[in-house]
Length: 386
Image (tube, rainbow, N blue to C red; front, top):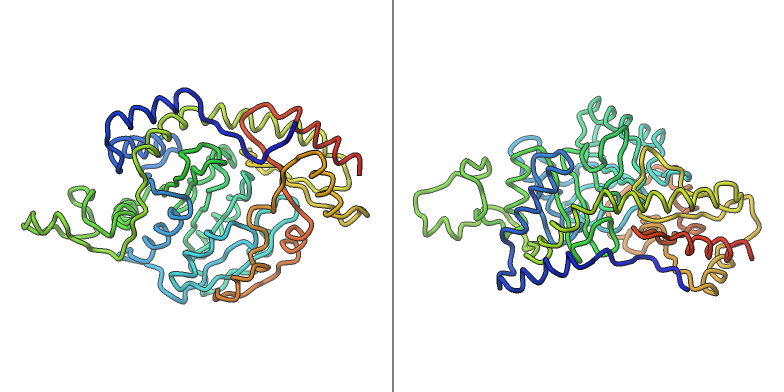
């Protein structure tokens, strides 16, 4: 047997949903996308959701929306605090809109912000904090929310890896002024490719809808606060008001989302059962640091960092995993500061020791909403043999 990084969650329901779209011969963004947006927002207890073609695009238009607000808009040169470990497209839109990124180190056990370092990083120039609950594990949102409120800082919650996680009973991806999700193949629900911006702010909702759709007025509600409608309907049909993008999803993605969102509680439950088995197997193995759960993780994957206290190396671990056909990869995107692209980014670093250690000594193996008992047993066999 082999142990893969990800497994499909599609069944007969998804095939039927896609077949219905094919039979309708209507593939561009329409009723399925709109209904999925409504159901997604409702599931997470938010007012509005805007679907786009990826979680990366969700981050892009969410950042853009913050630049186009009528009041308290971000501007180029503003300082935004980010964690050292995340996927690249957490950072790219911030850079592309001219923000200055301040990188803060992570806690080696949770892989999220070291909250003490985060507190020290806040300056009078800080306009926004980006939270990333790494691989399903919630950040300490009580402390971070308090910091934002005390300092009048925007909270942007990039929740692309952590759908279904909870902190103090509240879903991650719901605490920010703007929140983003991903529905990529390997994520908690899948629409093949897809993402969402979620907010309670009506202006941001209207901005995000326009920005995903060429900066068009089309799809704006009556009374939208982001433009004033004129009398010429011919002109209004093709009126551009924002420097937008085309990051629309299609009806296939919307139909899949409608099917998958119904499954989410069950999918998360199985991931958590797998995690309980994994933790039981490795909690006493001093050779590895495994991710310490904060709140209720949705367990995207299982991270392992070779401990400083052991004599084994990560390369030895990789050889053992290869021998047993166990797939593995870097933790999220690793420490972003160690990638070549950082030379293009306007940034400063407060501290990155833990992120560097995780980058150079860590990895993750897959989790999925199927019973992985045998796969985790295989992992134990491979690692105990070193």
